[in-house]
Image (cartoon, rainbow, N blue to C red):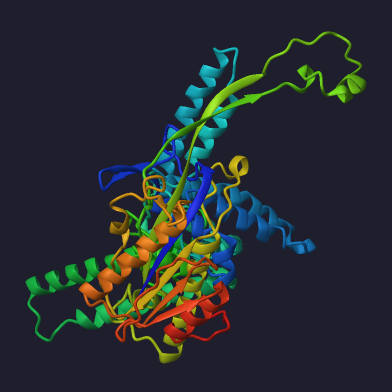
Length: 558
Protein backbone atom coordinates (compact mmCIF):
# COMPACT_ATOMS: atom_id res chain seq x y z
CA UNK A 1 0.00 0.00 0.00
CA UNK A 2 1.07 3.55 -0.73
CA UNK A 3 0.20 6.25 1.81
CA UNK A 4 0.28 9.81 0.42
CA UNK A 5 0.03 12.85 2.67
CA UNK A 6 -0.72 16.40 1.44
CA UNK A 7 -0.86 19.44 3.75
CA UNK A 8 -1.56 23.15 3.45
CA UNK A 9 -0.04 25.18 6.27
CA UNK A 10 0.22 28.95 6.68
CA UNK A 11 3.11 30.54 8.58
CA UNK A 12 3.36 34.05 9.99
CA UNK A 13 6.64 35.98 9.47
CA UNK A 14 9.40 33.40 9.88
CA UNK A 15 12.66 31.97 8.58
CA UNK A 16 12.14 28.25 9.18
CA UNK A 17 14.80 27.03 6.76
CA UNK A 18 17.60 29.30 5.55
CA UNK A 19 20.46 29.03 3.08
CA UNK A 20 24.17 29.65 3.57
CA UNK A 21 23.65 33.44 3.58
CA UNK A 22 20.87 33.31 6.19
CA UNK A 23 18.11 34.03 3.66
CA UNK A 24 14.87 31.99 3.61
CA UNK A 25 15.26 29.20 1.06
CA UNK A 26 13.41 29.67 -2.22
CA UNK A 27 12.86 28.02 -5.60
CA UNK A 28 11.39 28.80 -8.99
CA UNK A 29 8.13 26.99 -9.75
CA UNK A 30 5.66 27.81 -12.51
CA UNK A 31 7.85 30.75 -13.47
CA UNK A 32 7.50 32.42 -10.06
CA UNK A 33 9.85 32.54 -7.09
CA UNK A 34 8.45 30.55 -4.13
CA UNK A 35 9.42 30.21 -0.49
CA UNK A 36 10.79 26.72 0.18
CA UNK A 37 11.48 24.34 3.06
CA UNK A 38 13.87 21.57 2.05
CA UNK A 39 12.83 17.94 2.37
CA UNK A 40 15.89 17.23 4.52
CA UNK A 41 14.81 19.95 6.96
CA UNK A 42 11.28 18.51 7.16
CA UNK A 43 12.50 14.94 7.66
CA UNK A 44 14.81 15.90 10.51
CA UNK A 45 12.10 18.01 12.17
CA UNK A 46 9.68 15.07 12.07
CA UNK A 47 12.20 12.32 12.90
CA UNK A 48 13.57 14.02 15.99
CA UNK A 49 10.23 15.35 17.26
CA UNK A 50 8.60 14.15 20.48
CA UNK A 51 5.36 13.60 18.56
CA UNK A 52 6.99 10.98 16.32
CA UNK A 53 9.05 9.37 19.08
CA UNK A 54 6.06 9.04 21.39
CA UNK A 55 4.26 6.95 18.76
CA UNK A 56 7.04 4.53 17.84
CA UNK A 57 9.00 1.99 19.88
CA UNK A 58 12.25 3.01 21.53
CA UNK A 59 14.45 1.22 18.98
CA UNK A 60 15.69 4.29 17.10
CA UNK A 61 18.84 5.05 15.15
CA UNK A 62 21.51 7.64 15.89
CA UNK A 63 22.78 10.01 13.18
CA UNK A 64 26.26 11.12 14.24
CA UNK A 65 29.94 11.45 13.46
CA UNK A 66 30.68 11.04 17.16
CA UNK A 67 30.23 7.26 17.34
CA UNK A 68 33.71 6.80 18.94
CA UNK A 69 32.65 9.15 21.76
CA UNK A 70 29.39 7.20 22.16
CA UNK A 71 31.34 3.93 22.68
CA UNK A 72 33.65 5.72 25.11
CA UNK A 73 30.64 7.01 27.07
CA UNK A 74 29.16 3.52 27.30
CA UNK A 75 32.45 2.02 28.51
CA UNK A 76 32.78 4.71 31.19
CA UNK A 77 29.18 4.11 32.26
CA UNK A 78 29.92 0.39 32.58
CA UNK A 79 33.05 1.19 34.58
CA UNK A 80 30.84 3.11 37.00
CA UNK A 81 28.91 -0.09 37.77
CA UNK A 82 32.08 -1.93 38.89
CA UNK A 83 31.95 -0.91 42.55
CA UNK A 84 33.03 -4.11 44.34
CA UNK A 85 36.48 -4.05 46.02
CA UNK A 86 37.79 -6.89 43.83
CA UNK A 87 36.71 -4.99 40.70
CA UNK A 88 38.95 -1.95 41.23
CA UNK A 89 41.61 -3.13 38.74
CA UNK A 90 38.97 -3.99 36.16
CA UNK A 91 37.31 -0.59 36.62
CA UNK A 92 40.65 1.14 36.02
CA UNK A 93 41.13 -0.96 32.88
CA UNK A 94 37.71 0.07 31.54
CA UNK A 95 38.43 3.77 32.14
CA UNK A 96 41.83 3.46 30.48
CA UNK A 97 40.42 1.73 27.41
CA UNK A 98 37.45 4.05 27.14
CA UNK A 99 39.91 6.76 26.06
CA UNK A 100 41.91 4.43 23.82
CA UNK A 101 38.80 3.08 22.12
CA UNK A 102 37.75 6.55 21.02
CA UNK A 103 41.12 7.23 19.41
CA UNK A 104 41.28 3.79 17.77
CA UNK A 105 37.75 3.88 16.35
CA UNK A 106 38.31 7.38 14.99
CA UNK A 107 41.63 6.32 13.44
CA UNK A 108 40.22 3.21 11.73
CA UNK A 109 36.88 4.74 10.68
CA UNK A 110 38.20 8.30 10.26
CA UNK A 111 38.79 10.34 7.11
CA UNK A 112 41.94 8.56 6.01
CA UNK A 113 40.59 5.10 6.84
CA UNK A 114 44.13 3.94 7.67
CA UNK A 115 45.43 1.69 10.41
CA UNK A 116 45.53 3.12 13.92
CA UNK A 117 49.33 3.33 14.09
CA UNK A 118 49.57 5.51 10.97
CA UNK A 119 46.83 7.82 12.16
CA UNK A 120 48.39 8.18 15.60
CA UNK A 121 51.76 9.07 14.01
CA UNK A 122 50.15 11.74 11.84
CA UNK A 123 48.33 13.13 14.84
CA UNK A 124 51.61 13.42 16.76
CA UNK A 125 53.24 15.34 13.90
CA UNK A 126 50.32 17.74 13.51
CA UNK A 127 50.12 18.11 17.26
CA UNK A 128 53.82 19.01 17.40
CA UNK A 129 53.36 21.59 14.66
CA UNK A 130 50.47 23.10 16.55
CA UNK A 131 52.59 23.29 19.73
CA UNK A 132 55.44 25.05 17.90
CA UNK A 133 52.98 27.54 16.47
CA UNK A 134 51.53 28.19 19.88
CA UNK A 135 54.99 28.81 21.37
CA UNK A 136 55.80 31.38 18.67
CA UNK A 137 52.52 33.21 19.17
CA UNK A 138 51.41 35.26 22.13
CA UNK A 139 47.76 34.52 21.43
CA UNK A 140 46.87 30.84 21.79
CA UNK A 141 43.55 29.90 20.23
CA UNK A 142 42.42 27.13 22.54
CA UNK A 143 39.10 26.74 20.72
CA UNK A 144 40.91 25.85 17.49
CA UNK A 145 43.00 23.27 19.34
CA UNK A 146 39.90 21.71 20.88
CA UNK A 147 38.10 21.68 17.54
CA UNK A 148 41.17 20.09 15.93
CA UNK A 149 41.21 17.32 18.52
CA UNK A 150 37.46 16.73 18.22
CA UNK A 151 37.73 16.49 14.43
CA UNK A 152 40.41 13.81 14.78
CA UNK A 153 38.14 11.79 17.07
CA UNK A 154 35.17 11.61 14.70
CA UNK A 155 34.26 9.28 11.86
CA UNK A 156 34.84 10.32 8.25
CA UNK A 157 31.14 10.94 7.61
CA UNK A 158 27.95 11.31 9.56
CA UNK A 159 26.39 7.84 9.74
CA UNK A 160 22.93 6.67 10.75
CA UNK A 161 23.92 3.99 13.28
CA UNK A 162 21.83 1.00 14.27
CA UNK A 163 21.72 0.18 17.98
CA UNK A 164 22.73 -3.34 16.96
CA UNK A 165 26.01 -1.96 15.57
CA UNK A 166 26.72 0.27 18.56
CA UNK A 167 25.98 -2.56 20.99
CA UNK A 168 28.20 -4.95 19.01
CA UNK A 169 31.15 -2.54 19.27
CA UNK A 170 30.56 -1.90 22.96
CA UNK A 171 30.25 -5.62 23.73
CA UNK A 172 33.40 -6.36 21.74
CA UNK A 173 35.42 -3.94 23.86
CA UNK A 174 33.74 -5.06 27.08
CA UNK A 175 34.48 -8.78 26.67
CA UNK A 176 38.05 -8.13 25.54
CA UNK A 177 38.74 -5.93 28.54
CA UNK A 178 37.34 -8.66 30.78
CA UNK A 179 39.46 -11.31 28.98
CA UNK A 180 42.61 -9.22 29.09
CA UNK A 181 44.07 -10.76 32.27
CA UNK A 182 43.94 -14.24 30.71
CA UNK A 183 45.99 -13.35 27.62
CA UNK A 184 49.54 -14.83 27.90
CA UNK A 185 52.52 -12.55 27.22
CA UNK A 186 53.69 -14.82 24.41
CA UNK A 187 50.44 -14.17 22.57
CA UNK A 188 50.80 -10.40 22.96
CA UNK A 189 54.31 -10.57 21.53
CA UNK A 190 53.40 -12.70 18.51
CA UNK A 191 53.54 -9.70 16.17
CA UNK A 192 56.37 -8.17 14.14
CA UNK A 193 57.44 -4.52 14.27
CA UNK A 194 54.77 -3.57 11.73
CA UNK A 195 51.98 -5.24 13.67
CA UNK A 196 51.68 -8.28 11.38
CA UNK A 197 50.70 -11.54 13.07
CA UNK A 198 53.46 -14.14 13.42
CA UNK A 199 51.30 -17.21 12.82
CA UNK A 200 53.67 -19.84 14.21
CA UNK A 201 54.30 -18.01 17.48
CA UNK A 202 50.64 -17.12 17.86
CA UNK A 203 49.50 -20.73 17.45
CA UNK A 204 52.17 -21.96 19.86
CA UNK A 205 51.00 -19.47 22.49
CA UNK A 206 47.56 -21.15 22.58
CA UNK A 207 49.05 -23.85 24.80
CA UNK A 208 49.73 -21.21 27.49
CA UNK A 209 46.06 -20.18 27.76
CA UNK A 210 44.92 -21.48 31.16
CA UNK A 211 41.46 -21.77 32.71
CA UNK A 212 39.80 -18.37 32.37
CA UNK A 213 37.03 -16.66 30.48
CA UNK A 214 39.59 -16.03 27.74
CA UNK A 215 40.19 -19.78 27.44
CA UNK A 216 36.48 -20.23 26.69
CA UNK A 217 36.83 -17.80 23.77
CA UNK A 218 40.02 -19.53 22.51
CA UNK A 219 38.56 -23.04 22.61
CA UNK A 220 36.40 -22.73 19.41
CA UNK A 221 39.48 -21.52 17.50
CA UNK A 222 41.59 -24.36 18.86
CA UNK A 223 38.88 -26.88 17.99
CA UNK A 224 38.40 -25.53 14.47
CA UNK A 225 42.17 -25.62 13.82
CA UNK A 226 42.39 -29.20 15.10
CA UNK A 227 39.44 -30.40 13.01
CA UNK A 228 40.75 -28.65 9.89
CA UNK A 229 44.16 -30.22 10.45
CA UNK A 230 42.61 -33.69 10.69
CA UNK A 231 40.65 -33.04 7.50
CA UNK A 232 43.84 -31.99 5.70
CA UNK A 233 45.70 -35.09 6.91
CA UNK A 234 42.89 -37.23 5.54
CA UNK A 235 42.78 -35.31 2.27
CA UNK A 236 46.53 -35.58 1.67
CA UNK A 237 46.99 -39.14 3.01
CA UNK A 238 49.76 -41.02 1.20
CA UNK A 239 48.38 -43.53 -1.30
CA UNK A 240 49.92 -47.00 -1.66
CA UNK A 241 52.86 -47.18 -4.05
CA UNK A 242 53.28 -43.40 -4.24
CA UNK A 243 56.11 -42.20 -6.47
CA UNK A 244 58.84 -40.07 -4.89
CA UNK A 245 58.11 -36.96 -6.99
CA UNK A 246 54.39 -37.11 -6.20
CA UNK A 247 55.16 -37.60 -2.52
CA UNK A 248 57.17 -34.38 -2.41
CA UNK A 249 54.40 -32.52 -4.21
CA UNK A 250 51.75 -33.90 -1.81
CA UNK A 251 53.80 -33.05 1.29
CA UNK A 252 54.35 -29.52 -0.04
CA UNK A 253 50.62 -29.02 -0.57
CA UNK A 254 49.88 -30.40 2.89
CA UNK A 255 52.46 -28.09 4.45
CA UNK A 256 51.03 -25.03 2.65
CA UNK A 257 47.47 -25.97 3.60
CA UNK A 258 48.41 -26.39 7.26
CA UNK A 259 50.29 -23.08 7.18
CA UNK A 260 47.15 -21.43 5.83
CA UNK A 261 45.12 -23.12 8.58
CA UNK A 262 47.55 -21.81 11.21
CA UNK A 263 47.41 -18.34 9.65
CA UNK A 264 43.60 -18.30 9.88
CA UNK A 265 43.74 -19.43 13.50
CA UNK A 266 46.40 -16.79 14.28
CA UNK A 267 44.26 -14.03 12.77
CA UNK A 268 41.26 -15.18 14.80
CA UNK A 269 43.36 -15.20 17.98
CA UNK A 270 44.74 -11.73 17.23
CA UNK A 271 41.17 -10.47 16.95
CA UNK A 272 40.57 -11.58 20.55
CA UNK A 273 43.45 -9.52 21.97
CA UNK A 274 42.34 -6.13 23.28
CA UNK A 275 45.21 -4.12 21.81
CA UNK A 276 45.01 -5.83 18.43
CA UNK A 277 41.39 -6.49 17.58
CA UNK A 278 39.93 -4.71 14.55
CA UNK A 279 36.52 -3.01 15.07
CA UNK A 280 35.90 -3.35 11.33
CA UNK A 281 35.55 -7.12 11.80
CA UNK A 282 32.83 -6.55 14.40
CA UNK A 283 30.94 -4.20 12.07
CA UNK A 284 31.16 -6.69 9.20
CA UNK A 285 29.78 -9.44 11.43
CA UNK A 286 26.85 -7.27 12.54
CA UNK A 287 26.30 -6.30 8.90
CA UNK A 288 25.41 -9.92 8.16
CA UNK A 289 22.42 -9.63 10.46
CA UNK A 290 19.36 -8.30 8.66
CA UNK A 291 17.42 -7.73 11.87
CA UNK A 292 17.67 -4.72 14.13
CA UNK A 293 16.59 -2.04 11.63
CA UNK A 294 15.16 0.83 13.73
CA UNK A 295 11.89 2.39 12.60
CA UNK A 296 13.36 5.78 11.73
CA UNK A 297 16.06 4.16 9.58
CA UNK A 298 13.42 1.94 7.95
CA UNK A 299 11.44 5.08 7.07
CA UNK A 300 14.17 7.51 6.04
CA UNK A 301 16.85 5.09 4.89
CA UNK A 302 20.63 5.08 5.25
CA UNK A 303 23.32 5.60 2.63
CA UNK A 304 26.91 4.69 3.49
CA UNK A 305 30.01 4.51 1.30
CA UNK A 306 31.63 1.77 3.39
CA UNK A 307 31.19 -1.97 2.92
CA UNK A 308 31.17 -2.35 6.71
CA UNK A 309 27.47 -1.46 6.94
CA UNK A 310 24.24 -1.97 5.05
CA UNK A 311 22.64 0.62 2.84
CA UNK A 312 18.97 0.83 3.77
CA UNK A 313 16.56 1.97 1.06
CA UNK A 314 14.15 4.61 2.35
CA UNK A 315 10.49 3.60 2.33
CA UNK A 316 9.36 7.25 2.32
CA UNK A 317 9.74 10.07 -0.19
CA UNK A 318 9.58 13.76 0.79
CA UNK A 319 9.06 16.74 -1.51
CA UNK A 320 10.38 20.21 -0.76
CA UNK A 321 7.54 22.27 0.69
CA UNK A 322 6.81 25.30 -1.52
CA UNK A 323 4.66 28.36 -1.02
CA UNK A 324 1.33 28.37 -2.85
CA UNK A 325 1.91 32.03 -3.74
CA UNK A 326 4.74 34.23 -4.94
CA UNK A 327 7.67 34.70 -2.56
CA UNK A 328 8.59 38.04 -1.03
CA UNK A 329 11.72 38.51 1.05
CA UNK A 330 11.61 41.07 3.87
CA UNK A 331 14.18 42.45 6.31
CA UNK A 332 14.03 42.98 10.04
CA UNK A 333 16.33 45.68 11.42
CA UNK A 334 17.24 44.72 14.97
CA UNK A 335 19.12 46.63 17.66
CA UNK A 336 20.61 45.62 20.97
CA UNK A 337 20.40 48.30 23.69
CA UNK A 338 22.75 48.50 26.65
CA UNK A 339 20.55 48.49 29.77
CA UNK A 340 22.84 50.99 31.52
CA UNK A 341 22.19 53.53 28.77
CA UNK A 342 18.42 53.32 29.08
CA UNK A 343 17.42 56.20 31.36
CA UNK A 344 13.98 54.71 31.82
CA UNK A 345 15.43 51.83 33.85
CA UNK A 346 15.58 53.70 37.17
CA UNK A 347 16.22 50.48 39.07
CA UNK A 348 19.65 50.33 37.41
CA UNK A 349 20.53 53.68 38.97
CA UNK A 350 19.47 52.40 42.37
CA UNK A 351 21.20 49.07 41.97
CA UNK A 352 24.56 50.39 40.80
CA UNK A 353 24.50 53.89 42.17
CA UNK A 354 25.24 55.23 38.72
CA UNK A 355 25.04 59.02 38.65
CA UNK A 356 27.04 59.75 35.50
CA UNK A 357 25.26 60.94 32.39
CA UNK A 358 25.21 57.93 30.03
CA UNK A 359 25.33 58.50 26.28
CA UNK A 360 22.38 57.38 24.23
CA UNK A 361 22.39 54.93 21.33
CA UNK A 362 22.40 51.21 20.67
CA UNK A 363 24.99 48.65 21.64
CA UNK A 364 24.85 46.93 18.26
CA UNK A 365 22.54 46.52 15.29
CA UNK A 366 21.99 44.36 12.22
CA UNK A 367 19.34 42.92 9.94
CA UNK A 368 17.72 39.50 9.51
CA UNK A 369 15.72 38.20 6.55
CA UNK A 370 12.30 36.60 6.85
CA UNK A 371 9.17 35.84 4.88
CA UNK A 372 5.56 34.87 5.42
CA UNK A 373 4.23 31.96 3.40
CA UNK A 374 1.51 29.37 3.04
CA UNK A 375 3.19 26.06 2.19
CA UNK A 376 2.06 22.98 0.30
CA UNK A 377 3.96 19.90 1.41
CA UNK A 378 3.81 16.31 0.23
CA UNK A 379 5.32 12.99 1.25
CA UNK A 380 4.51 9.33 0.81
CA UNK A 381 5.28 6.03 2.53
CA UNK A 382 5.45 2.62 0.87
CA UNK A 383 3.91 0.54 3.67
CA UNK A 384 5.06 -2.81 2.29
CA UNK A 385 8.63 -1.56 1.81
CA UNK A 386 8.60 -0.19 5.36
CA UNK A 387 7.48 -3.59 6.67
CA UNK A 388 10.20 -5.38 4.66
CA UNK A 389 12.82 -3.00 6.09
CA UNK A 390 11.67 -3.80 9.63
CA UNK A 391 11.72 -7.57 9.08
CA UNK A 392 15.08 -7.44 7.30
CA UNK A 393 13.66 -8.88 4.09
CA UNK A 394 14.62 -5.75 2.16
CA UNK A 395 18.27 -6.48 2.96
CA UNK A 396 18.05 -10.24 2.44
CA UNK A 397 15.33 -11.21 -0.06
CA UNK A 398 15.83 -14.89 0.70
CA UNK A 399 15.05 -14.37 4.37
CA UNK A 400 12.11 -16.46 5.58
CA UNK A 401 10.12 -14.25 7.95
CA UNK A 402 7.85 -16.08 10.44
CA UNK A 403 4.23 -14.96 10.37
CA UNK A 404 4.39 -13.68 13.96
CA UNK A 405 7.46 -11.54 13.17
CA UNK A 406 5.75 -10.17 10.05
CA UNK A 407 2.68 -9.24 12.10
CA UNK A 408 4.82 -7.41 14.67
CA UNK A 409 6.65 -5.58 11.87
CA UNK A 410 3.33 -4.40 10.39
CA UNK A 411 2.27 -3.07 13.79
CA UNK A 412 5.59 -1.24 14.14
CA UNK A 413 5.19 0.12 10.61
CA UNK A 414 1.66 1.31 11.42
CA UNK A 415 2.91 3.11 14.54
CA UNK A 416 5.67 4.72 12.46
CA UNK A 417 3.21 5.97 9.81
CA UNK A 418 0.85 7.33 12.48
CA UNK A 419 3.77 9.05 14.22
CA UNK A 420 4.95 10.56 10.94
CA UNK A 421 1.48 11.85 10.00
CA UNK A 422 0.96 13.37 13.45
CA UNK A 423 4.40 14.97 13.31
CA UNK A 424 3.55 16.50 9.91
CA UNK A 425 0.45 18.03 11.50
CA UNK A 426 1.86 19.19 14.84
CA UNK A 427 5.58 19.77 14.27
CA UNK A 428 7.54 22.23 12.16
CA UNK A 429 11.20 23.22 11.55
CA UNK A 430 12.64 25.33 14.36
CA UNK A 431 14.68 27.88 12.40
CA UNK A 432 14.48 31.30 14.11
CA UNK A 433 11.63 29.88 16.18
CA UNK A 434 12.60 31.52 19.48
CA UNK A 435 12.66 34.99 17.92
CA UNK A 436 9.58 34.58 15.71
CA UNK A 437 7.44 31.88 17.38
CA UNK A 438 5.61 30.89 14.22
CA UNK A 439 3.54 28.14 15.83
CA UNK A 440 0.68 27.26 13.50
CA UNK A 441 -1.41 24.26 12.44
CA UNK A 442 -2.43 23.07 8.96
CA UNK A 443 -5.50 24.37 7.19
CA UNK A 444 -5.87 21.04 5.39
CA UNK A 445 -4.53 17.50 5.66
CA UNK A 446 -5.34 14.95 2.98
CA UNK A 447 -4.24 11.34 3.49
CA UNK A 448 -4.75 8.94 0.58
CA UNK A 449 -4.15 5.18 0.87
CA UNK A 450 -3.84 3.26 -2.39
CA UNK A 451 -2.94 -0.18 -3.74
CA UNK A 452 -0.48 1.46 -6.08
CA UNK A 453 3.22 2.06 -6.48
CA UNK A 454 2.82 5.35 -8.38
CA UNK A 455 3.05 8.47 -6.18
CA UNK A 456 1.55 11.76 -7.41
CA UNK A 457 2.05 15.24 -5.99
CA UNK A 458 -0.64 17.91 -6.38
CA UNK A 459 1.92 20.74 -6.65
CA UNK A 460 0.57 21.71 -10.09
CA UNK A 461 -2.47 23.14 -8.30
CA UNK A 462 -0.17 26.09 -7.51
CA UNK A 463 1.70 26.39 -10.83
CA UNK A 464 -0.26 29.63 -11.08
CA UNK A 465 0.35 31.26 -7.69
CA UNK A 466 -2.54 32.08 -5.41
CA UNK A 467 -2.87 35.88 -5.44
CA UNK A 468 -5.16 37.05 -2.61
CA UNK A 469 -5.30 40.68 -3.79
CA UNK A 470 -6.04 40.06 -7.47
CA UNK A 471 -8.46 37.22 -6.66
CA UNK A 472 -10.70 39.51 -4.60
CA UNK A 473 -14.31 39.76 -5.80
CA UNK A 474 -17.17 42.14 -5.16
CA UNK A 475 -20.45 40.82 -3.78
CA UNK A 476 -23.92 41.77 -5.03
CA UNK A 477 -24.16 44.32 -2.23
CA UNK A 478 -20.92 45.98 -3.30
CA UNK A 479 -18.77 44.61 -0.48
CA UNK A 480 -15.25 43.42 -1.28
CA UNK A 481 -14.86 39.71 -0.58
CA UNK A 482 -11.32 39.22 0.60
CA UNK A 483 -9.54 35.98 -0.23
CA UNK A 484 -8.36 33.80 2.65
CA UNK A 485 -4.94 32.55 1.53
CA UNK A 486 -4.92 29.15 3.34
CA UNK A 487 -8.53 28.40 2.39
CA UNK A 488 -8.04 29.36 -1.26
CA UNK A 489 -4.91 27.15 -1.30
CA UNK A 490 -6.93 24.30 0.20
CA UNK A 491 -9.66 24.73 -2.44
CA UNK A 492 -7.05 24.67 -5.22
CA UNK A 493 -5.60 21.45 -3.76
CA UNK A 494 -8.99 19.71 -3.59
CA UNK A 495 -9.82 20.71 -7.18
CA UNK A 496 -6.50 19.31 -8.36
CA UNK A 497 -7.06 16.09 -6.41
CA UNK A 498 -10.49 15.67 -8.01
CA UNK A 499 -9.11 16.34 -11.49
CA UNK A 500 -6.24 13.85 -11.23
CA UNK A 501 -8.33 11.16 -9.51
CA UNK A 502 -10.95 11.22 -12.28
CA UNK A 503 -8.76 11.80 -15.32
CA UNK A 504 -6.14 9.20 -14.39
CA UNK A 505 -8.53 6.73 -12.73
CA UNK A 506 -6.54 6.75 -9.51
CA UNK A 507 -8.45 4.43 -7.24
CA UNK A 508 -7.90 4.53 -3.49
CA UNK A 509 -8.66 2.32 -0.51
CA UNK A 510 -9.54 5.45 1.45
CA UNK A 511 -9.11 9.24 1.32
CA UNK A 512 -9.10 10.98 4.68
CA UNK A 513 -9.76 14.73 4.66
CA UNK A 514 -9.13 16.89 7.73
CA UNK A 515 -9.68 20.67 7.53
CA UNK A 516 -9.23 21.60 11.18
CA UNK A 517 -12.80 22.93 11.51
CA UNK A 518 -12.48 25.27 8.51
CA UNK A 519 -15.27 25.55 5.93
CA UNK A 520 -13.33 25.26 2.70
CA UNK A 521 -16.30 25.52 0.34
CA UNK A 522 -14.97 22.65 -1.79
CA UNK A 523 -15.15 18.89 -1.27
CA UNK A 524 -13.57 15.77 -2.64
CA UNK A 525 -15.69 13.88 -5.14
CA UNK A 526 -17.13 10.71 -3.61
CA UNK A 527 -16.21 7.89 -5.99
CA UNK A 528 -16.76 4.14 -5.66
CA UNK A 529 -13.14 3.58 -6.63
CA UNK A 530 -11.87 6.27 -4.23
CA UNK A 531 -14.12 6.66 -1.17
CA UNK A 532 -13.81 9.84 0.90
CA UNK A 533 -13.91 9.94 4.68
CA UNK A 534 -14.07 13.48 6.17
CA UNK A 535 -12.72 13.56 9.74
CA UNK A 536 -13.16 16.29 12.33
CA UNK A 537 -10.19 15.64 14.63
CA UNK A 538 -6.65 14.26 14.64
CA UNK A 539 -7.76 11.33 16.80
CA UNK A 540 -10.44 10.44 14.25
CA UNK A 541 -7.87 10.70 11.45
CA UNK A 542 -5.48 8.36 13.28
CA UNK A 543 -8.27 5.88 14.06
CA UNK A 544 -9.41 5.74 10.41
CA UNK A 545 -5.82 5.41 9.22
CA UNK A 546 -5.15 2.48 11.56
CA UNK A 547 -8.37 0.80 10.39
CA UNK A 548 -7.42 1.28 6.73
CA UNK A 549 -3.95 -0.22 7.33
CA UNK A 550 -5.49 -3.15 9.23
CA UNK A 551 -3.64 -2.41 12.47
CA UNK A 552 -4.74 -2.34 16.14
CA UNK A 553 -6.25 0.92 17.38
CA UNK A 554 -4.02 0.94 20.44
CA UNK A 555 -0.29 1.29 19.97
CA UNK A 556 1.68 -1.82 20.86
CA UNK A 557 5.44 -1.80 21.31
CA UNK A 558 6.86 -4.63 19.25
